[in-house]
Length: 417
Image (cartoon, rainbow, N blue to C red; front, side, top):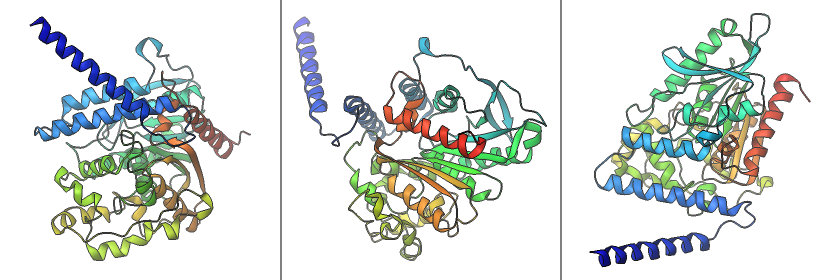
């Protein structure tokens, strides 16, 4: 028995050593700063994807509550300080409240707002593919506290998520919270002319959708690596990054997120990846919004590719998801009219499948006379912004992006130069 255990242990050690060798030899984009950190972050994501795939093939839902708790905990340990490192907020008072039936965390400067001293306010929607995470697991509020933005931060930490609550539940919760802030601005000590929405990934989707619904009520939308459209999963950035860092960003991950948000089964995944999920006439009407030749400025030098054509639709899949794709609450980038939306600050990463839809949406906003500030980080990956939260794992580009955003807000909202 002992010999068998030793043999098994030896096999496991050899397999582990071989896996480490593969990870260390895996090519990364040239010039990528801090490559070893990215390498192991990507490997962690690959392992999570493999485990998720196994769970799904066994007939279980990877987003089941117990598994979700485990995955959220892993995310929290990755993004945040370790428990013995975690500092208490220094410049903010944290309180819990309920706005329009949605639980929120409110981060308020120690100098309490009043009717005569109101504060700009950011309503922040966290990312996580409309499925994962919560504000308690998220580093963004800690990042803003560390850099001392003198504003109120409202985070709907328990907006309804997939798979239990599918579209439009998350959107409705985020819209309700933002409307509450707008309606009760004086009572909350909020400056009515400085109410902003912000979010990353799926949260960026929610922020953009809310900004379209409340066009004249908001002063700014801050979109960080946003997921804005599910019409075409073969934009240039989807092509460029399909196999580059699949543990961090990939067409499969994004398509899976969209299906969960829509409440549709994973068996539709191949149709989405082949761009066969939208009725032909609908696709022809919406396709110009994602055409890189129309909306991806060449001077940015992001890619040499162009958006691929849509495929022949799968009738069953197209009948299920087509209506949602055309809904700007689901895919804000596909709204027919984006004029009058709040000014936009858009953060994009070179190594992100979502890169080009954010750039193209920024271009459409600009064409519609909306003021836009586009920040492209040429060595960053999807989700890099989250590593500016004071956790044990940080990236130089993450810290720089947070500083750039804070500087922009200070200049354009507070007039601080």
